[in-house]
Amino acid sequence: MHTSSSLRNSATAPVNQIQEAISDNYVIIFSKTFCSYSTMVNMLLHDMNVNYKVVGFDMLEYRSQIQDVFYKVTSERSVLKIFVNGTFIESTIDTYRLHREEKLLLLFHQYYFFKSQRVRHD
Image 1 (tube, one colour):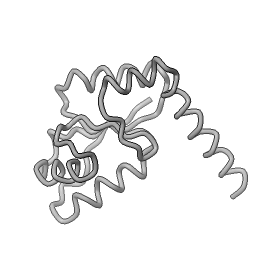
Image 2 (cartoon, rainbow, N blue to C red):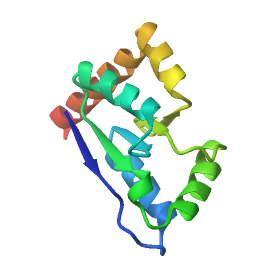
Image 3 (cartoon, helix red, strand yellow):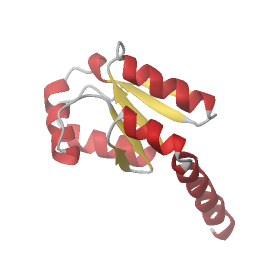
Image 4 (tube, helix red, strand yellow):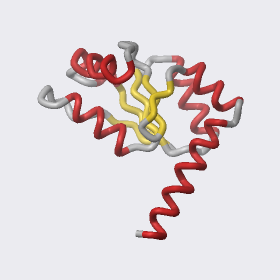
C-alpha cells in the first residue's frame, strides 16, 4: 500500500516540512511524477507490500527551496529521494542492491519489530 500526496505549498518552512514528512513516514519517496526510477522503486515497494508515501516534487510550488533542503540533507540536488526510517538511501541502484542482499527487507522487519515492542511497553 502507498499513499500519494504533496507537502503544503508554503514558502515559510520548507526545511520543517521536509523533516516532518521524513519523520512522520517510515518510507517516503520524493520524486517527479514522470521519473522512471521512482516508478521502479514504487513497484519494488508495492511488490514487497510495504506502506510508503510518495511526494510529487514537481507538483510543489517551492521546488527550489526544497531542492536546497535536499542538498543540505543529502549533498545531492537530484529529486528522487528515498528515506527509510529517516535514513537516506542514496539511489535506486542502492535500493535494489539492498533488496538483493535482503537488507532492505531487514530494515522493514527491524522497524516493525521495534514499533510493536514500543506499542506493548507504552
